[in-house]
Length: 350
Image (cartoon, rainbow, N blue to C red):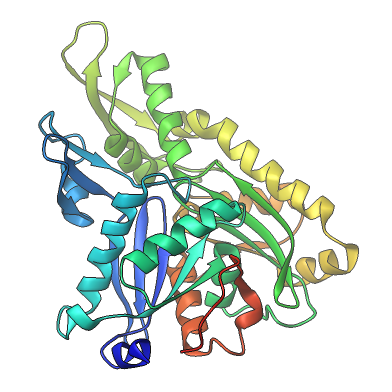
């Protein structure tokens, strides 16, 4: 009864709870929040200093007592209390122009396909403690497939590769379920680490995570480019201890990321090998769809197409595919109930 009352003051929301970024969809309004999944904490007082965009600006620039941290590692809750506070912040932000103290929204959250029951419960508990009256979980590749309008409930095979910050989810979907899937810890963050290691080993240069990500976005590629790209790499010389700048090109960065990209492509190939032949025929006709921020790496779709002999393309607006899928589920939970993940909780009808 109380839930029904609180429901009148609440806006149902869909959340793509990513390792790097959190996107929030509000029913009837669309995507209204796209902020980094970063929380800045004062370790002396245990108080949260900033969340989201403001906290991201602090990464690598804070005094010793303030630590900018990601509460999700590889798409999984690593710090329960901080994740809960982050979710509260986003829920309050959605309801800031209404009666936020009464807000008890229904929430659909995207989670990686390989998470355990305990990890699913951690996400659900964090959302409930943050103020959600009802929580639905959906696997991210399924949400992404729904978000790019693939016919997930039909008896045809669709293949989706969701490359996020912490994880890559590869899934073949048919009849409202995932037939074959792979969950890799090789994604955007791993590519950043590869660039940091490459700078240290090749040039004796220490660079930060943000610098590595900026270089990856500026000149990173998975396949040889028609025109060479260059960018400055700035950091600290490990020999002299002084600032240093060198110019790197796309071939250098491709070499740095080669191993991780090969792991990703091989995972796509092995997923196809495990797929039933009828569904492989569908995928050959429909192609492999790439979503997530990592899919924007230049030439990745071309490399996957060359290696698998199956057409591959990056979806329109790949960054928001998962959250758009959670929004579509919110609009019609009853007809899409079969795509949701069960956590063993008994749900109370609302």
